[in-house]
Amino acid sequence: ELKKECKTDLELELAVHDYIVGSSTYDKQAISVLETPQENSENPYGILFNKTGICLGYTTAFQLFMDMAQIPCITVYSQDEDGDEHAWNQVEIDGKWYYVDCTWDDPVPENDGRAPYHTYFNVTEEFMEESGHCWNKEDCHKADSYDASFYLADYYQAEDKSELQEIVDQAVSQGKMDFVIKTQDQMIELSDYFVSHKKGVFVGGQIEFDGSWYTLLMRY
Image 1 (spheres, rainbow, N blue to C red):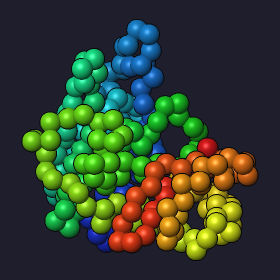
Image 2 (spheres, rainbow, N blue to C red; image 1 turned 120 degrees about the vertical axis):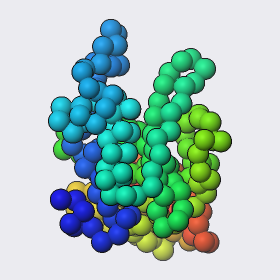
Image 3 (cartoon, rainbow, N blue to C red; image 1 turned 60 degrees about the vertical axis):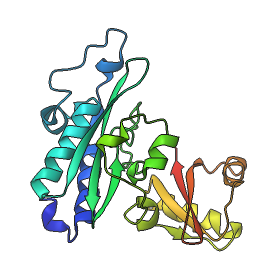
């Protein structure tokens, strides 16, 4: 059904990401004191039918959809020094590889009715490292492109700070829970600006691409 509405692999990948993140929630029993995850939380069945899962459930569900769509995709496993395990995906779009972490785009605690976040949708190896992901890169493909990143796919453009308030109000009125503002200059002071104006928006990250800065903003 998702494929009928999508014209490109990127559109389908985004639709799958949003479906998984938007219709599922992280298994809270897995992070409880007893650490007793529900049955099937580590596989696609838990995500698609029980609507709950752990990182491996999110990852294998995404892998399943990509395999069905014949979009090249692999699963990345990791374990840190404390023994904590995590899993996410790497996907190829238009000949370039990107990282996707559906689990981290669905943070706990769940906010009822919120739209999916896209902080970890089609990001680079550098971005994943800076966010705290640790893994064996030799098992993965090189990922250094922003071409299919959410940062560059859908954004508002602001010429100066005077336009920021109008842009935020517009995005929030449209029900957007995360969005991107493109500027000509890096606006480090954005955090203080929104906090002081009580807009309920915080800066999720900034990247420079082709001479412009892209700032991911999230409403909370």
